[in-house]
Length: 338
Ligand SMILES: Cc1cc2nc3c(=O)[nH]c(=O)nc-3n(C[C@H](O)[C@H](O)[C@H](O)COP(=O)(O)OP(=O)(O)OC[C@H]3O[C@@H](n4cnc5c(N)ncnc54)[C@H](O)[C@@H]3O)c2cc1C
Image 1 (spheres, rainbow, N blue to C red):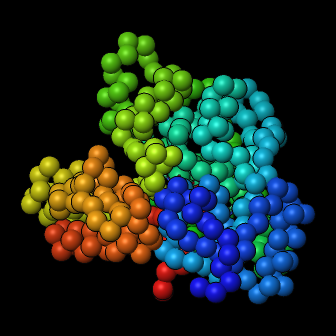
Image 2 (cartoon, rainbow, N blue to C red; image 1 turned 90 degrees about the horizontal axis):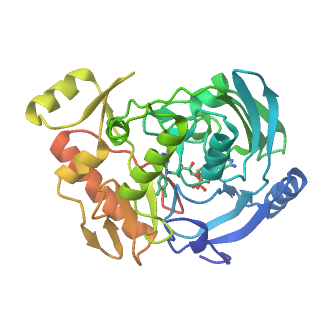
């Protein structure tokens, strides 16, 4: 593509080769406004990037790739029961979880070791091991890409759902998140509903405390997920599909070992189980592969975004043909034909 000069390969954990017309890092609000002005004057759309752990570049993009890198954590309010923090979008998510634990601010332990920035965390309402970000969010602060206006969205306005929020819907590509206000507990209330976590903690004699939950989550994740610094990947490549109860019961009769979880809209199926059952674990070709240890994770060896999306499409087709349910890609895809 003509004019795409900035290499993006090192900016994403999948390390797919791609270039952008322009690229900026903005460390504060004036620099962010200046970058937005540059995009407007150059007629370039803006692609916002955090740590690049949940994006796929399928090819070059004619756009300004912009990262808001401001850091900082501020205590806004604190009493015996809770603390409210304002955390700048450029802070690393895991570093925040670790710091909160050390301060005695509880609630985020199950979300340890999720890669990425604080600014990206509300986008898909990050979740793991039985906990989601949404209940801890008080306010999301953002700047409008179109006119630089500042916005403050309270939790209810964020429309949080399973790996979903207003930032993937009505406000998709419209705002840059600059800070997130998070309310945490001052007293421990560990959540150990997730079966693998419960099992991991069952061996310990002491009742689980937040530190034990944090350690167990870190150990589980390190054992199960490939480290993107060594094996380029974007974590789970597909969302877990939700099907209605009648469909779920029919599937359970046909596949008695199929894991199912009761959820608001019906039952959630385990995308990894469906993919594995279709025989995709370890399948490789064209420089991309289904991770041999985890069927939900697609990895880039020396391929490109188109090869990765072609593999994803073959997986989607085979899961739809076998189980009659549609898998949805979790990461955001850029640079692909619509
Ligand atoms: C090994 C691995 C494990 C993972 N495990 C989990 C998991 O357990 N649970 C989970 O939920 N996710 C998981 N993920 C996905 C990923 O870590 C999260 O989605 C994370 O929040 C992405 O953060 P990021 O800074 O890398 O965002 P990016 O990948 O850079 O961006 C993701 C999306 O957010 C947008 N965005 C980023 N920053 C901003 C901002 N400041 N303002 C507006 N929009 C922005 C981007 O435009 C893009 O659309 C995993 C990923 C990997 C690689």
